[in-house]
Each structure stands twice: as C-alpha cells, then as structure tokens.
Figure (spheres, rainbow, N blue to C red):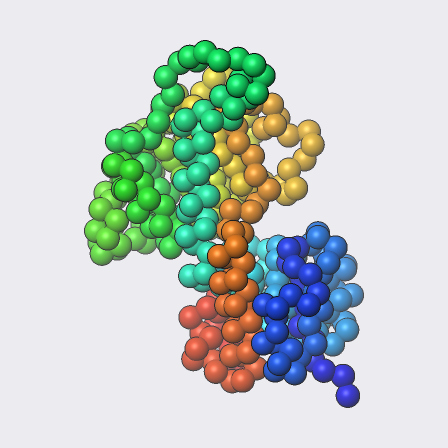
Length: 329
C-alpha cells in the first residue's frame, strides 16, 4: 500500500533534506521539487493528482481550479507568511486549511530590510564599485540613518522587528497602521500617524503591509511625491504595494535617495523593467526571509503544522490557519 505523499514545492530544498525527516518518521512519502523554480498551475495540478495529501507551498498558484482538481489534498502548509497566491475562499470551499509559518522568519525579513536601507544610506554599492575601478577620492557625504526618522507601514511581527532595530540606531519611529494598538506602539516607542504624514516626515519608509485589493498601489504617484527627495523606500512585503511605473517616473525625475526592492509587481522581474536602470535602486529576488535561521524555523513550523493537522491537534494548528472555517469541515 502506498504511503500518503507530502509535496514540497518551495525552490530551495533537495530530496533527502533532514528537515523533512519527521514526516518520513511519521509514515509519509516526501517528494521535493528539485527544479529550482515554482510549478505552474498546470504542473501543480498534475503533481497533486499523484496521491498528495499536503503541500509545503512556495509561491505557486493555488487557484479554484487547483482545489477543484485536487481530490486528495487536505492541507496547504505555506512556507512563509503571505498567502496572496492562495485562493483562500476556494480552499475553504474545498475544506482545505491553509496554514502559515507565522512567527518563524520575521526577524530575518526585518534584518534584510535594515541591511538594504543601510546599504543605500551609506552608498556602499557605488563606493565599492569606485574602489574596484581604481578610484580613491571623497565622493560627498552620505545620508546615513542614525538619528533620522523611520516610517514603518504595517506594525505586524516584521514591522515591529524593524522598529526595534531602528530604535537601536537612535531613530524616531513613525507607524501607519490602523490595527496597531497602544501596547504595540509603546513596545517599540513609536508614534501613530496617518500614512501621508509618515511619508512627508520619514527619511526611511519601509513597507510591511499585506497585499489586498485595498493596499494595491498604496504607494502611488501622489504619495511618492509626498516623500522627501532624499528619502529611502524599502519594500520586502509584496510588490503590488508600489505602483512601479510611478516609481520609475519619480526616480527618472531625480526623486528619492534610494529604493530597495525584494518584491515586485511581476516576478521574476521582467528583463525590460526600467528599475534596473538606476544606480540608487537595490534589487533582490524575493529572498528576504530566507536566511539559514529561517530555513530551519520556517520548515519546522510547516512540518509541525502538517503533523498537528493529521494527528487531529487542531487547537495547536488553529493560530496558524488563515481560513479556520476549513478546520471545522
């Protein structure tokens, strides 16, 4: 009799990785995606038709069509904290809980956002290039961040982790997040302001909001114009938060001191994207939450979510499920 199968779709693992040993010990077959790319919708449907009862999901598309065709699928364990590539309504209708890895990689993303900001504020890239090219001269004072104002859009786990780092750097902290309560703001010594005020005052703006219809192009041409000409904008959350065409136009006009992007409206970033043309834009391929600590912690969370679900430990799983109605089914 064949064993139930767990499909690992994320791009960074290989068959036999010891992080999946608890699943093998529990009697599951583990199939790892070793193509180093995410499956398409059609490829995912084909894979799910081979007795897969749960997936450790990357950013592949879980559409209504996928859920309708996946008769054996019982759980999607998302390797990460965003679920914009999952049709959660379709998952709920199919009785498939979508379990996240909340609390496992927020420090990693915050560290990456801070690293991008400091890289840009200290002009490390251009200066490295100058020295490698044989130049050795003072090229002007860099902006720096110590003692400046940080604007954090979204005070969830990641936003709070970045706020702590900014506070340690002597920065004033502004937060735009209608859901943040007084205790959360007090913990990071932050002031709540409206988004437009944050954009006008902040020297560093870092985005940590979810991708929803309401937040699409949250940072548009009007709001980019509110920002200081020297301000640094960082996005390690979701690409659609920024209107990229408006951003390109702002950069072409000489606005903004630097931009760090780990996420984009279209991924992979198209070869024709004009974002590649600007020296003061730092680009990264959606990897901010993928340091070695997160590799272990996020994977362990996904594995635990799977084991808890099939063992009936739904109370333990519930805090990680974004569509709890599916658990009731």
